[in-house]
Each structure stands twice: as structure tokens, then as C-alpha cells.
Amino acid sequence: MRFQDSVFNQLIKVIPRYQFDRLADKYKADFRVRKLGCWELFLCLLYAQFTGRRSLRDLELNFNANRRHFYHLGCRSEIRRSTLADANNTRPAVLFEALFQWVVAMGLKGKQKSQADQMASLVDASTVVLNKTRFGWATGHKGKSGIKLHTVYDLDAEIPTYFEITEARKSDLTTAKKLTYESGRTYVCDRAYYDFQFWRDLDEAGCWFVIRLKKNSPTQIHRRRRVFKKDRHILSDNEVLLNQRMARSRKNPYNKPLREITVRVEGQKDPIRIVTNDLKSQARDIADLYKKRWQIELFFKWIKQNLKIKTFLGTSENAVKIQILVAMIAFILLRLLNRRPFFKDIPLLTLARLIETSLMRRISLLDLFVTPPPDPPHPVTNSPQEVLAFA
Image 1 (cartoon, rainbow, N blue to C red):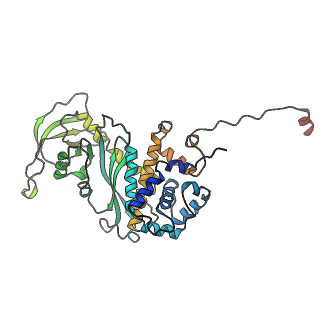
Image 2 (image 1 turned 90 degrees about the vertical axis):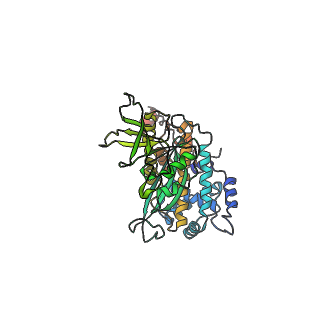
């Protein structure tokens, strides 16, 4: 009989074991580790993400119930709750950061960039509120505890390409200024990234930016551009200059002409103002690009609702970082599966739910999403024996 891998084993084949071992050797992650190595920890946490395990005890019972799959997964023995807790606290999170970047490279490999999206990336951050008593290290605002997930989301590949976890009180802009930006790419941000020095850094790096202006942001009209009648949602399109002097007589670091586009948003009373250093594209294309910024909000909503992002299997900073990084890897694995021709038209949520219920079944991924044929009807016979049996 032909051997069939489990659904879980088919999903993790994207990550070769030798590649994981190379990263583990690089960071000496398994140095003097006798029980529950980093690969086994990764399997346990990835299993928890796909199946929605709520606690270490829940993970221990459910994972060990599938011990017949351990050999093919590369797991040496059953896990113990205490050992798993120690591993969460002591295994280096930098290993999983490197693994996340490697999986991102796989997600971007061979992906054709569409001209409409102009190699666009969305930049934003989302806050996860934590219990102050259990997560005292995660300081936030107004006495609350929490962490902030700073993300760069590739609009064309539909995956996060950069991820950093900080305390909730850290500014979105502070983290954004430390990033390395790709020349020729457009970065779309909201008002949290309103900073002239940040805009100058993007411009000098050869990048385009599309950022929403604040309501009271003063600009000087340098030249009015034509607005086409068919673009009814575009109220104005002007080349503008920023004030050369800022508060406290500081000199404005950005002294180049910008483009300000005022857009009417359906369902909102006031229009929004968008500023960009792209002076060539059409106004409707820039407005549509900013509208797509909502995709990163949907991404944050999806991972919080369908992955283990809001509840954690450990309380230390190291445990929280590892769990979130594994959640991001799980999302990219689902996205890579969603790109295959057979799964292209299946919603990502449907993929996640079917995988959750069949993760340890020995069935092909193709058969998992194919409706089985109906059972053939039983033949009706009228033999003399049947007649006599009921006489």
C-alpha cells in the first residue's frame, strides 16, 4: 500500500529540515539541549497555531495523541508541559526571526510584480493588549500592558515581509525610521507616519510614498493639475510646497515639491488629503493605492481572529516573540498553499478551517478539498429467499 503523508507533514515540507538545522547551528540554538530541540518546539507551536490550542496542557494532550506521526515529522518523543515551558523561555527567538525571513524569501520567490501595484508595500502597526499582572515587562500607555506588532506588508505577494515586536508604548514612527527601504517601491502609510524627516529618508532612498495628511497640515499650492471629470471622487490635485519653517523655528528637512490629492470617501463627511512624491502617476491610481492600505488592517484582523496572537502559551518576552513569529510563519505557509493552482479559488479562511480539522489525517491535500462522490444505491432484488424470510 502506498504511504501517504499527513496534512501537517505536507505543509511543513516547504521548510526543509536541513535548512532549519543550518539556522539552528548558526545561532547555537540546540547547544546542550537534551530534550525538546528547536525543531520539536517549532512543530509543537506550529501545531498549536493550526489547531487553536489554548494552553500548554491542551497542547501536550493533543500533540501526544498523534504520536504515531512523530517519526515522519522528526519528533523524537512525547512532549511534556514543563519541558515545553522551559523551551519557550530559553530557546533563542533570533532563530525563529531568521526562519521567518527565510520563509518570506520563499514567498517572494518567483512572484511577478504587477504594474498596477507599483511594487507597493503597506506599513502599519497593531497593538495587542496583555494582562498587566502576567506580562509586566510589556509596558503600554496609561498603566496598561501590551505589545505592538510593526509590519511591512507586500501588497502583491499578500504576505508580511518585515515584522518586529516591541512594547506598546513605542511609537510606530520610531520603528519605521530604522527600516531598510527598497528603491523603486511605493510605501503606503497612514497619519501615524506623518514626519518630514521620514519622508525625506524615503525620497533619498529612491522610494515613493503615499501618506495621508492631517487636517490642519498647511501647504502652499505651487501648481494646480487637471482633474478629469470621470474621476468624480478626486476633488483636487495640486503640486504643493511644505512650510520651510516648523515649530520652534526649526527648518523643514523636506524642501521638494509634493503632490496633494484631495479625495472624497463614500460614507464620510470630510474628504481626506493624500500627499505623495510621485508627480507622474494619475491621481486616481494614487487614490486607489491608498485605498488598498485597508488590506493590512484586514491582515491584522485575520491573524488575531484565526491564529494564536491574543492568548499566549508563555508569559516571558521570549515566549511571546517566538509564538508570534511562528504564527506569521503559519500564515505564510497558508498563503503559499493558497497560490497553488488547485487552491487558488479557495478562500484563505476555508483553507485554515479544513486544515485545522484534518491536520493529522493521512490524506492528500488535493483529496482534502474534493467532495467525495455519493455512495452508489443498493441494488433492489426480489429473490424468493427474501420473500420467504419475511413471510
